[in-house]
Length: 446
Image: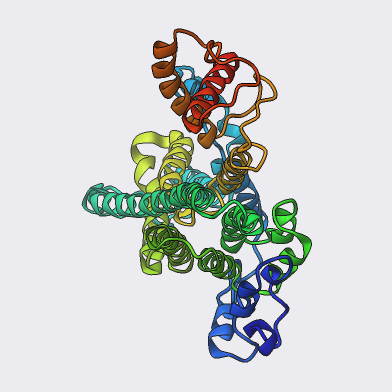
């Protein structure tokens, strides 16, 4: 009885239509059982959870929705547009509908109202429209801003650099997931014997399932069951959905596939190394998701910004008069925008194009599978549009190289002209005749 059955978990998807060894290994454990302390911790800090958090306001809800528009994959056309000098005009004219402006609507509205109130008050005070006991609120000295602006600059630089490092680290880890997905399938299709058709098919199904499950693990409100349709079989999807830590479960299945294949030691270790890289990327992504930049940096930076921007209109009135209102709003937008960008990219998984990466992994795996299928390895060519597999290419090259030497010896590609039909050939002559015929087929092919 497999471990999954012994622990009351659903039967392993590998147990259906697979060699019995995989079922005996009990590759499904279903995560931690209910009541297990680690399982409770996992549920408490599950992705998308916000223990004790308030419901987002309208501006915050818009910011969360707008993050999906940032999931862009660049191609040549996008790079050309990105480098175009017209970007200055395009970015300025797009400012009113900018997601950054709409996301900062609340703080900017506060600064606008404050600056307007200060200007009206100071105008009325200087015009003598207020009682004599009212105070002049203008800040005569600019030293407070001169003494503290460098500290604010350092805070903003640290904030944005640390956030970009997290974003870049997440993208590199997902690049590793894509590369290793290609690599483990390439190795498996090259090393797993062709008579183990089900194992080869399992490897090609479960490898892209890892990137899909990891994407849904790192995002809120993703439908993993929908993502896996067309990749895994229905009972396999059901097994994944019952696991609490789904990427970990997929890796467990992949490790069982490698073990069941009984590969040579070097090949098995190489494939296990790729699974270990999957696990490292999973842990690295979880670290970024679970651990933000220390919160006191974020809190102190936002407090620092709001205090300085609150004091700014009192300092600008003496020199800028009514221009204080637009200048204060513009300066607030520029400074708050830098801080907002740092906060936005601090959690990179909701803005990275993970769908495109996982879809690329799926497409690459299916192409590798197609070029290593039984029909692709048969050696028969149907037409010029056929996809040539790597073994076929090797066979064509070998036949061409050997055929050249035989052609030089016998002076043509028409076979051995001295052999009459019906004449028995020696083993050596028959082998040479087969090479010449392969040479003819490859020339017709190309």
